[in-house]
Amino acid sequence: MDEPGAHTGGPILGYRVLRLFVNRESDEQDRLMFEGMTAQTYQPYADDPRVAPVLALGLEPLDSRGSITMTGTDGKTETVLVERITRGRTVAVLFSYRGYWHLWSMASAATETEAGLNEFTQILIEVIERLHPIELVAANVSRLVRSDHQANLLQAAMYRRVDVVVAGHVRFEFSGPNSHVGRLLFAVLAMMAAMERDWIVQRVTAGTIARWRRGLWPRGKQFVPFGYALTDDGVLLPRPELRANVRQMMLVLSSDGAPSEKQQQLARLGVMTQRGKRGARQSTVDALSDPVALERRLNACAAIWIQGEYLYRHRNPFRELSDMAGVPIQRYDAGTVADMRREMGQTALADALNPAGPAVQMLRAELDADVLTHPDGHGSSRNEPAGIHDSGELQMLCRVPVPEGGWAEPEVLDRYAAYVQRLARDAIRDRPTRRPRPLSKDVEADSVNPSLHMHMLPSTVMRTGAWTKTTGRGPAQARAHIAPLTGRRWSDDQYDYEINIAANNKYAVRRWPVGTDRKDLVLRAKPVAHSERDPEGADLP
Image 1 (cartoon, rainbow, N blue to C red):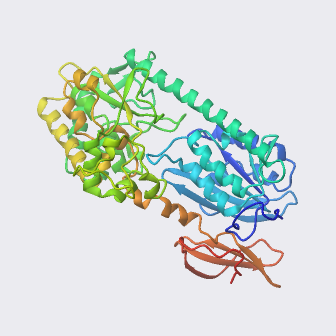
Image 2 (image 1 turned 60 degrees about the vertical axis):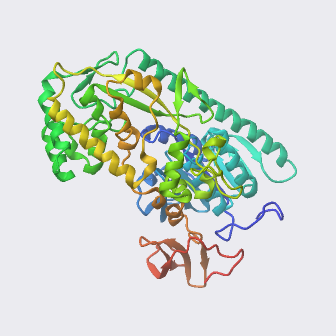
Image 3 (image 1 turned 90 degrees about the vertical axis):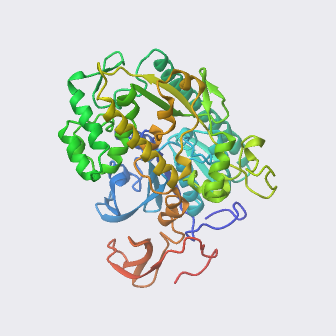
């Protein structure tokens, strides 16, 4: 099926798949856009009987929690298993139908973790390494690549494991006598796709900075704090009639009640969801499923109600910059890095800042030499990994008007301020990497009380839904969804067999009579050994 010597190593499945379709749309909230991208990806193959049933599914695979039923062009139904692959906060689904495999995801292909890795790219690389597709299909090159940093990693995997990449109607040969031409053309187009994305991000970020400089609310209408209204001109104005409600909200948040009790009290006060999906309507907060996350998201706006300020910490999208549109990039200083290293240890620090890859990838630092110096002043060993790479953040201090007399009397404000600062101390003690980056000189000079911003968690941390440790959400968890033996098939005279992942993180061997599609019998199961790879060509049980 594949050319001798074309690739090194064998596919983890034990065989190479014919075709892998990659269907990606970066807007995780716009399912209509994803549906359009699905049609664009599969349009050249719409008449293929192995593709038409996939188009008929709509968005069903994205919501599947195990399997979907597909109806072929011949009218026969077949149960298809769907794997959910996770890396950090990125989710992808992988399924196969009659020899073709499909990887779908609503995620960015450029946004990087502190380790400099993109979660979708890491998923795609693992799937490529696992399947060794002869042909990889996407709507265009930008569905695969949106960053120069990630393009290098992805291209290395594709050059080893893929024969042909098809982007729309353009074919790139990665094996054979013309492989050098295909690789060159793909590299050029990948660079152009990355440049296009960078220009978009630059324009959007510069626009956000321009809005902030004009005194407009930079977060937009999807993030309006309770007690405020956003005018058509983009100005955030207080609603004095809600002063009593906001005061009571601060008392509820700073109380010792259970999160679920606080949620019900906040709903009775009229607190609405802050940021629903695009196009969705707001609802009272009692409809939310996570009361703890609700409390943190409200506390992200604490400085607004306490002192009429909101420090917008915008992650720096370009790690090599020192400023953007005149706003300096704030990074952890050498002392903070040394303190975090001393408190957590080098490897633990890397894992905490790296939800997408092993610590060794994180520990190859790109910071200045003084950052790499040990706290004891002796410097770092040549063989010892050094520090972290901090992309930094842009800090924009927004002055927000408050009702006459403030939202509450000083005693209530002080109580609420002490509460959010206590939350910050507890969270930073559990994970030092949550501590805020130092304030810029402009923020320190312009803030009424800069100490509050320095001693409360950044809004980017407050608004994060899960505070589980990243070491539990990293590559080990991803491999639980991409286990080495998953999908392997074999047959005897009576049955077809297939290895799948069971819900209890074990392998399940299923069988069904030859000639039927019903997988109704689990033969045996054993724990998934993520670190073990079956030898190339090893016989199946």
